[in-house]
Length: 97
Image 1 (cartoon, rainbow, N blue to C red):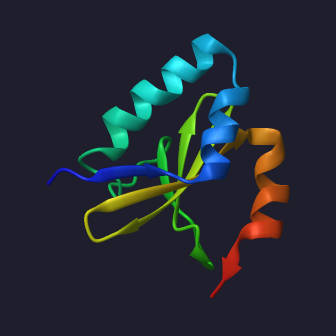
Image 2: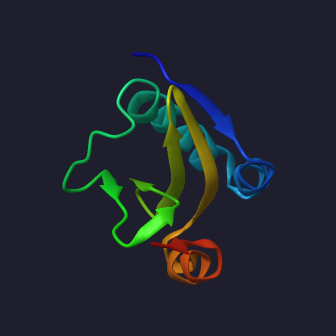
């Protein structure tokens, strides 16, 4: 099944702030991993976030973390941030169960 990928306004801004070569890699890997199997977890790449209702998943791309939700046939990317900012962002934005 093909998923529609939607970037939130915040994620668009996050993407613009990345260096060009990193931005290209992030776009490519979002397409590879989230277009067809966004909920297929793995040990290193995609992780289902525990204890959170929102965001539901995290995609790891080197030192970048992509946080997203999956609803029906849509993937909504909420943030594209560095690993060092991820914990702070989750505490501020994450909705606990």
